[in-house]
Length: 450
Figure 1 (cartoon, rainbow, N blue to C red):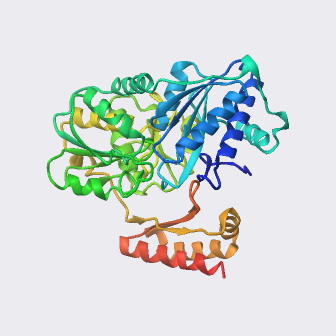
Figure 2: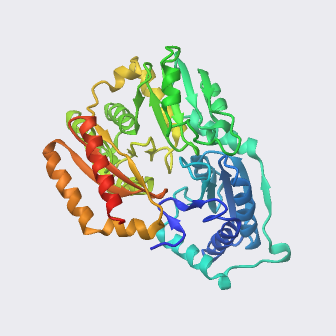
Figure 3: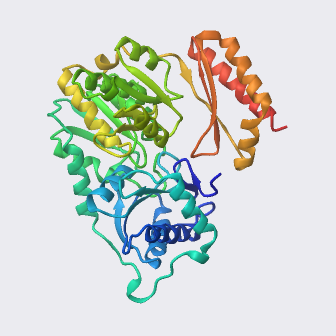
């Protein structure tokens, strides 16, 4: 069991669980591991989102890395996938993103990418963890062996935008609404859609350090839906704080989630002979309508555990080049090493342009089962989470509720990998029945604490 690394890097409330001391130690430990791997003068690219705590954590992390002899390039505010891409393009030893993605501004995280642009293996994370816990073996450079810290935000931002625009196939003639979640997309979306020669309007692009993901972006898509209902736009895109996710809103103000995005693009790739294995990868929380859609379109649909790393591993195992999550985290492995919200937007626009259809027409035949996923907030940390999830009474209650739903529904209870939450997913014949069952289960979970 990892002490510091979770399902997506080192996470915590900034200044408490994740403070400057931990960031410094993590940076020094990571640079030491790079040296152990034979990187005599390693180079590390660091990007960040717009959270107020990023200043503190970036400074501490960069200082830790340079103290162990690594040269650091500060990319400034850029999306998570930009760091992965630029690490490979620049030939750097490692890429780092300081971000808590879709979570509230109080939280932050440190995500690490290898020189190949993929997230670090469990084995490397364990080695870094060991050095954070016991710093007697970390490198402490002096004199000319110390690392340098530099940065050129504009150059690297332009390089990333060029890589995304290269995936576009034509010009979209309608108007586009874009919600940047007051996050990293504020630094790239405007120049990206200008390069696409699109007519667009951007909202939630005035970050102040504490408004990232606040009532905006893909986690609060109601703002974009209301704008789309004005009838002035043909499509809307909502990104999350670090812009690795994208949700679509149709011309009528209805949400097109990651499952539906995945289905639309998979069908198009299949028709073009570009979908490897005639298959796509979703997750255990993907709507059951995806199984029906796959069967109706001669596709295979695989389910991975939640988390982009798990989706990517399932893609490797099954030979797929397309996978994603309901949240809008879509991976195009022929184009990128991780999910990219703005790449997803361009890929969806490509289908829209080539089809000649509206967004609502593209998704109208994708089956959807009524599904809800409320959450129960934990106050006792990982110990409370583990105790609840391992309690046999919870397993009995889950089985009982599943039996009551019979074949017309589904129950899935899982802990969040990035927040202190237990999520309860229920599918049923109606949304009302699903929510009733989900809330009953949450009340049962509460009773386990007494």
